[in-house]
Image (cartoon, rainbow, N blue to C red; front, side, top):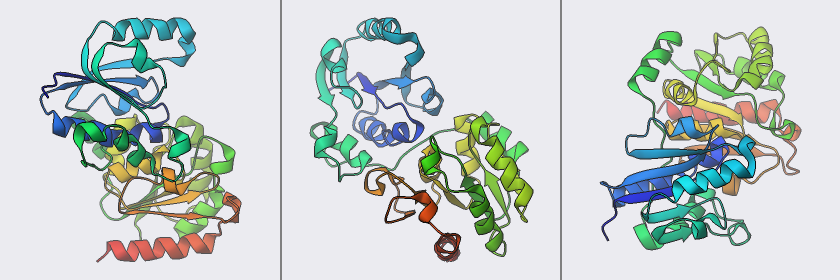
Length: 302
């Protein structure tokens, strides 16, 4: 099948959006000459802007309400697509113009399947058994900017102290204790996150005995990805940063409170996690994390 125009409707949260990038990669591999347009949220759109095979980004702004949504639909209907893949909604496909349409699998039938596998299953009849790691991109300028601001030769632990709600956040003083306990195995800590995580970063920096680069709220998403590529290992809560770290090729160690590692663990053969049996993140002890992370650091030396 010839295919010149493809539209993909991706998800909103940073981590969820990253877990749709294997679909983009497989579509690009199957149809390398096709233009791939994307419907994404304003907050996650920066992830896709540096993608070399990306066509047009249609940004959905939830604040614009239904008026903005209908304007978006009208803009999408101006193009007749060869393929439309909707990984988000149950109805948008029926309003758009396309030769072949592929919809998401229901959550009810995929509760014990990783989100990436669920997304890839939606296009199985189109691309077969193709799979791909999660992928992100950063411009040369962003990479140079990050290298100038955060020179990180050596072994740096990337750490994400925040998350999108309190039940997912391990206490910052425990992260400090872990980093201090591993001081002999790392050269320093790089803190990543949004501006909302600055207070956590300030607390961490005040108590840490290691050098700390605090990048919270200081970088764009592609720049954060570029910084992660300079690091050695990632440690953090269940958040989008863990998925960014996996895309950067880092071994990741995620602390889960509520949530399903089966579905939301970073998509990588180097992804590790710990979860309290009661799904209470406060039930995870410092020593458990130190022991597991120490083993992971030793493995990366081999």
